[in-house]
Image (cartoon, rainbow, N blue to C red; front, side, top):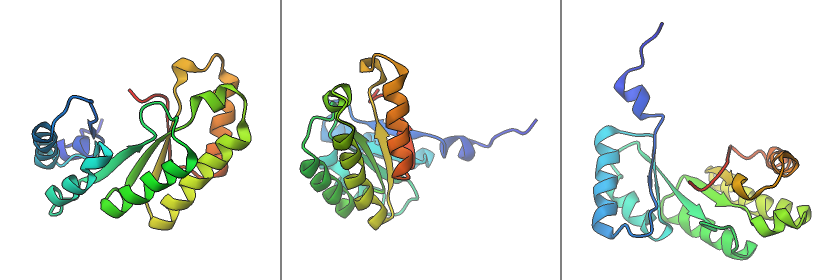
Length: 164
């Protein structure tokens, strides 16, 4: 049996700093904690990506942020803009929430286009894309299967089952 080191365990942790009541001081404390323990990444509110990049510049802790959070209802163009801006500010991972209403409507062309648009931006910049679908809202597995197929077609790096 192999024993993992503290660093190996830390590098499996994405430190989430997304609670809506977190103020800038709390976000800075969370970033400092992530840096202290050298975790894999910090997932931070979009407006704070630049701050996180500045605070983490001398570390290998990656920065991620959320797009269309928490319900995925933003227009595709807005999600593209959010993604581009987050990457410019220093994000290396994008957690995009799909439009649940469009999923439940069976508008697979819309969902395909939405995921494709964000995947094109992240791949161009060498960033990872994590697509989030809210499984609690999906009435059966056929939605999850279809979403996974679309994500696979666009070579999405990760699929997540909910925003938390």
